[in-house]
Length: 570
Image (tube, rainbow, N blue to C red; front, side):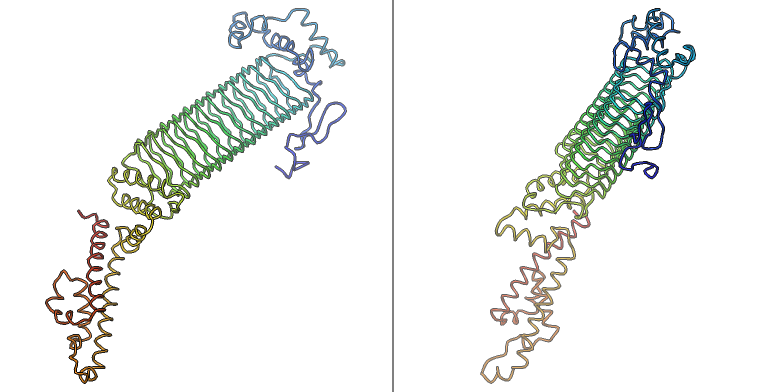
């Protein structure tokens, strides 16, 4: 924890104090011993810190209890000459004894020489220079806990026949494990990699544990294979992360990790579940041509930059609920064999699902597309595919997005029609009409606007009904005002030797009856009851009556259309 660190701004394994004898104090308070006082370090550096000759001394020593057949099989496995593993000669043994005598002058040789059957114990050691363990064979558990590597550490093609424990170790510079073989558990929990960490083509047979590790530079696992479960939970990849062509034989757990640099999982194979729940991808991320044989779990994951899932095969459930895609995300030719869940997912950029197939239940319920309409061109869609029909989940239509949006909504409408979902089909039709309205010019634009305002683009029952009522009332009051005017001025009109119009003989209710008859002229009520009145209305009220008749036909049509679409009438 940070409150236990000497310097909160430094990593736990960084050195805060060094001593004349080669020992040191780490930031987390752990005391390290001098490297030249560790027998296993002395054996690994018989001819110096970084010499290829050291491999011969180490491997000859570690294989001294093996039979010739065992050494032959091991040499084949490690791709090295059998002579490299042969028993040490007398001259070589003399060199080893001389080195140990120099480093441990006060102890008998037999007390200091390591036992190849015991664990290779380099725990709590301060390694001040570059060191190479290239093609070293560890015949017993390898213990590197709390070690501080001040220079680069080379474990190229190293073979760990039992467990390898690097827990809370600090690599100040590069850590190289290409083609390394971990036959037992590989423990890299809370390890700090200060520069490049290379595990290219490394082979992990046992459990691989990288929880809470910190990769400052690039983490390169290209071509690595993990036979047993692996755990990268709460790991920070500050530089790029390369997992191209990696084979995960069991569950791969990346929960709560942070990929701050460019991340590459291209052509990676996940044989069992892949758990990326609550992972933060801060840079471009690619899963191009990867294969998820188990469940793909991306719950509450956040992609802040572009993400590519082109040609990915999801053989089991694909879970993306509550996931945030801040950049563009691409799923072209992605194949979903089982259920796919994108509920409440948030797409800020383009979401391209063109080509490929959804073979089972697919849910986009509550998914929000903020700026662009998703693309599903040429994609095979399962009939049980759901989308939200709430406008707030779909992007605002602008002049810049209308053309592409129109085409995308046309495809979505076709999908809804193929899936026999009339409500969703009409929703996408309305969205398509909004795009057309935005693109239209002049009178066409106002026709689209009127259709949307008066009919809700063909789905509303309330709007045309309210329109009919308002026209009836407004026109009725117009007739009423004319009737009242005639009543108040009847004597003046008669005195002027003029005959009162028939409207003057109507009642208050009659004014609204006349309005109703004009509004629904097809019923013939105006000719049956108001023929004389209509003949004497005058030019302005006659114009009003004509407009009522036309409006009534249009609004009744919209009302019928809304009823048909709302209740799916044929």
